[in-house]
Every structure is written in structure tokens, then in C-alpha cells.
Amino acid sequence: MTGFRRGIRLGIDVGRARVGVARSDPDGLLAVPVETVPRKGEPVRRIAALAAEYEALEILVGLPLNLRGEDTPSTTDARRFAAELAGAVAVTVRLVDERLSTVSAHDVLRQAGRSQRDSRSIVDQVAAVVLLQQALDVERKSGDPAGPAVAPGQEPA
Image 1 (cartoon, rainbow, N blue to C red):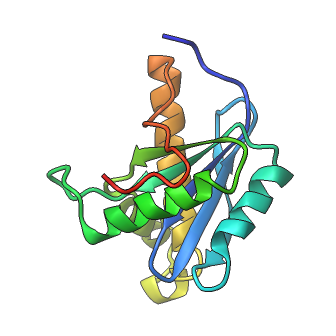
Image 2 (spheres, rainbow, N blue to C red):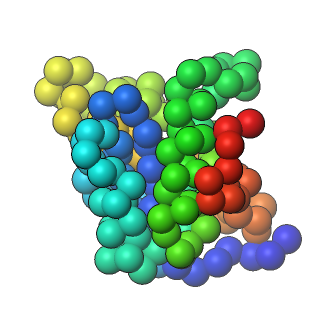
């Protein structure tokens, strides 16, 4: 058990069309939305710029396993994205289990009175907040970082 490490973390929710980005405060108490990055173009470059801007300690990429904990096509996509990101930044990139983060994000937005159509532009950010907050809570409880580190260019498992 290493104890909680101080520093800003970025949470990344990788989707087919968009990538949600969230960040924590330096004490890792609260995750907040940052932006939604279009998947077309150069999303890795934009996220690397955000990591530099916020002086991130690490980046946590959501790993969308199915409810049985098995890989899906989205899982493979997230692993590839994380490996590409790991090759573009000077900080550790980790994969964290994000089961139900998008479902939780839709629930939060619905409770706030937003329809699914109205929420499309921000649901990825909210999902990133959910997965980042879960990872922060795991590290705070266990004293160890949430999820395994990704080697740059690592092939999906």
C-alpha cells in the first residue's frame, strides 16, 4: 500500500464518435468535466495537450468490459486508444474498469431533467467524470493506483 498520490488526473471515456475528458483536483477529491473531443481528427494530440496544460500526474482510460468482465469490440478500441495515448504523453496511462459508467452518466443527466438527445454532447464528459471518480475512490481506499499501466504501443490483450 503506497498511500494516495497528490496530483491532477485525467479521466478518458473513449467512444466511437467522441472522447469524454474529465479531470480531478490535485488532492483527488473531486472529478469534474473538461471537454468532449471529437474522435475524428487528432483526439490523442488534444488529450496530450490537456495533460500538459493541467500538468497531469496520470491519465485513466476507461476499459468498457461487459457485465461478465469480458472484452468487447469497444474494449479493444479503448486498449488501442490508451496505447496510442501512452506513446504521446510523458505520464503514466492506466486502464480502469468502467462498467456502467455511461449508464450511470445517463442516469445522472436524466435526474437533472435532460433528455438523452439533449445530453449527447456532454454524456461522454459525465461518463469520464464517473470513471475517474471511481478510480480516485479505489486509490483512496486501497492506497494503490487503480488499473494497470499501459506501455506505449502495447497491443490489445
